[in-house]
Image (cartoon, rainbow, N blue to C red; front, side, top):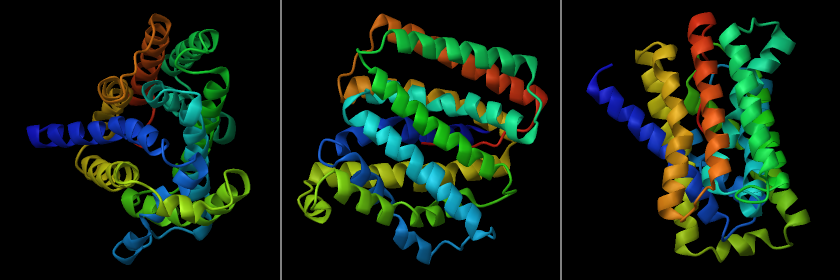
Length: 293
């Protein structure tokens, strides 16, 4: 892989990893459901310049509901009070083993020995977090993040049946789904004046929301799609394992988060499981290359 593309991979990993700290900063000023709606509302002007993917509307709407809305509604709820940004960046990657397991159950896809071992190791890492809940992630936070990962994995099942597609355009068009339902849900459970909350958002809050929307979706997916177009997926997707590493490092620098020893142990075990899953994919079957937050 040429140095230029390695730099691009570094930019994507930095954008996706730092995104979790930006989410936590945004959540200091906005409640979770309102932030989900605003994050994707910001992307809607891009519909004017990005052609709709040649997919049935039901698939675009399903991806919008499961990945754009479901994943982030659960994730933001966890980040609000029950999980740190660094650990959330790691735990949300349990979407990978969940996707493999669901693909086996729904599509009958073969699970290799390396993938089976990776699944077992990742579950062991989650068990460490569950036993240690109450520090950097509570039991509720762990459940919420796993629900977000499960929603993401269900969306991945839809993605597996889309064929080649412009990933950036797909996720921008799928951004049509969250704004109105999240605005309505926010009004119902988070307070009666969501528009007033948005109007009162300080510059720090706006900067965090814009960063979450632009860095993750526009920058991340456009560069990731370009890299996958130039290189085999098996050469690109393993770099996604660096996203939680960067997420934890950025959260430590920006937010002052300090995982305790059991968190480090659980994280190392989960990363080992994810690495085994990537190894199993490279040897056994094609990789989808869907990794971003």
